[in-house]
Length: 390
Length: 55
Ligand SMILES: Cc1cc2nc3c(=O)[nH]c(=O)nc-3n(C[C@H](O)[C@H](O)[C@H](O)COP(=O)(O)OP(=O)(O)OC[C@H]3O[C@@H](n4cnc5c(N)ncnc54)[C@H](O)[C@@H]3O)c2cc1C
Ligand code: SF4
Ligand code: SF4
Image (tube, rainbow over all chains, first blue to last red; front, side, top):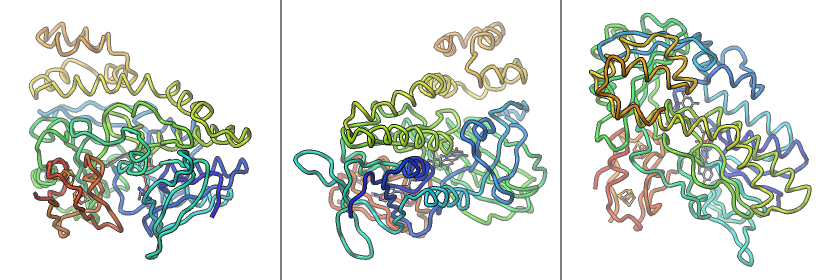
């Protein structure tokens, strides 16, 4: 079987790439080891509002629940409500959302191979020539001059190709999540609960999917030694809102909250989406970033296809475009994460007391200076911790 | 050596696969298996959100 490009993984990154490349005339194969796209869900399923315009995403009714803002809680329970284009958005049903992206790519001419697992790279005279795969007990080769890893966190083939996709404990969050029905008091706000006792180096989230249905999850720092499931069960048991709530699904996973990998392309190979650790280090969101990267990589692949030159030099257009669009923002977010993780509960309570909703908006826009100045006025002891932000 | 997997706890998230330094773990249809490459480093045990792994 010969193609122009083989994509490993039919998540948002893989389908976005495939749609773009197939539309431009490339013969694209997407291989996905699961028989069922989009399951099991490993996600809070939230997507910020600003993405819908910039990526031209459409949400059909029944696939997403509109969100109007975020409520953030300090360890002592103090609430800040933030409404901007990042905290509005949708909580989507990923089982359907992912499938719709695949359907759109298939309509543009991409070929899909579910229940087909990539097991290794095929090389010819030292150059990438395809992947070896396993399907229905059969092992065979699929050939193409370009292989695209959209493998998500596993990234085994990308690692075989020499990319540093192995995640380290310090730079991941370990997450456990229930979808629950019968929750009292959901208000079209995503809720985030901070505190070292609630979720060491992380938070508990409630992402509503309906008036009384929500994803209720927890992420804790991978190197904290905490048991996320036990902490989440405690949180739910202690909060009267969940008294009548029933878990209807169990989800969870491990997500990168570190820096993107150092390079995204080699001769005949690209890494897109969460496989390349293109994830927001503050909230672990990676769906929209994966789609954006997939589209950028698709455009670069088309340019390479025109020239029949799949060298790293030609493919690097994707990496340059992506870093120009997201690199700086995400590196500021990573700095912020590393500051937040040094705060104790007292610091958190104090900061929430001092700052207002408009300060929170500034922080989300990476405009740290005025907020840091305000906090330091009342709590100079945080100088060392906060200095890296200004 | 290989890690012991409690399938009754595992949620099939592949988190363990992402941190294993020697790629000893594989997820196929929600089932994790560990092969002989495992060096018993314990990283996967620490990251598993469902506490499904033991050395
Ligand atoms: C608990 C949790 C909560 C999250 N919450 C949010 C959120 O609220 N909002 C948000 O934006 N993001 C969230 N994320 C992150 C988000 O889920 C990912 O960033 C997103 O799924 C990345 O898309 P992707 O296409 O890069 O990879 P994935 O969606 O992971 O897709 C990769 C695909 O590749 C397949 N694959 C891997 N290896 C092979 C192989 N060898 N052969 C064939 N197929 C293979 C996999 O089976 C998988 O289907 C969360 C993550 C976790 C763990
Ligand atoms: S990290 Fe734990 S729950 Fe997730 S696949 Fe591995 S063993 Fe299963
Ligand atoms: S113990 Fe270490 S080497 Fe063995 S499977 Fe787990 S992470 Fe891999």
